[in-house]
Image (cartoon, rainbow, N blue to C red; front, top):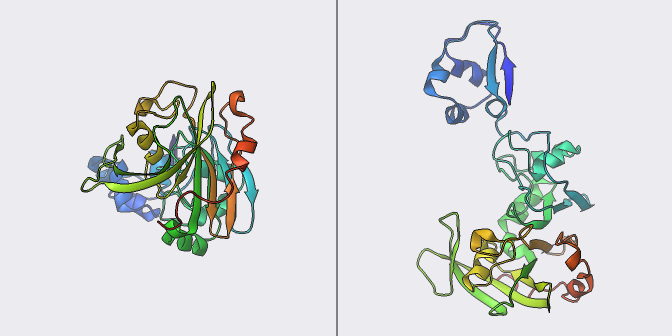
Length: 297
C-alpha cells in the first residue's frame, strides 16, 4: 500500500525530508535504498512511499482475518479469544492479520500506547500463530512492566489443551531441553550444552475413537515447546504437519487458561476443535485451578 506526499520546498536529499517528518534514519535505511535516500526532491513534486515506511511503530486500523472476541474486561486487563491462524502482533504497518490491528479496529486503540517499544505492546505473552486460545492484554504500562519482569513467578497456571492421535508415551512431570536456534525447535530428554530446559505436566482427560485429549500445564514457555516435546516422543499434535503430525483442518492446540497471581484467572472455553469435542466442559472443570507444576520451578 502506497501513500502520496508533496514537499512544499526543495530538499537536497529525501533522507532529510523524511527525517523531518519524524522518521528515524535507521528505519528508513531498512526500507529504502541508498540511492532513494540520496535523491533530491523538488517542491510540489508528488512522491509515493509505502505506508510501512511512513508509519514506523504504528498499528494499522484495518483488520483482515478471523474474528477474535473479548471474553471479559476490567480496569487492568482485556481477556481475548484468539482464533487459530491469527498472529498476536504485527512486525510492520502492512500486516493486518493480528490481534493488535483488531483491537484498534474495534476502538481500543488508546490501549496500544502500552509498551510502545515492544512489538507486542500490552500483550502479556505470545501464542503461536497456529495456536488458538486465551490472550491477556494489560491496559496499564506500570502493571505490564511489573508482570513481565516477574512473569515466571506470577504466572501460577499456564494450561493448554491438545488433541493427539495416540496416547502420550509418558505423563506427569516431563522435562526436556530445547534448541531454539532454528525455525523447527529440537527437543531432547538428554541435557545438551546451550539448549534451554523446559518442563510440562501432562494428563490425559479423554481417550476414545475421536482422539486423545490431553491437558498440559507449562512451567516455562519456550517457542514451540509443547509441539516439539510431543513430537520428540513420536506423538505429534493432531494437525501439526510442521512436526510430522497428521494433516487436519487446524493445529489442535489451544491455550485454555492463564492464572496470574491473584489478579486474574482467564479461561477460553471456545476450543474451536469442532463438533467432536464440544462436550469437554465437565472434563476440563474437573482439572481445577491448580497447576501440576510446582509454582516458580
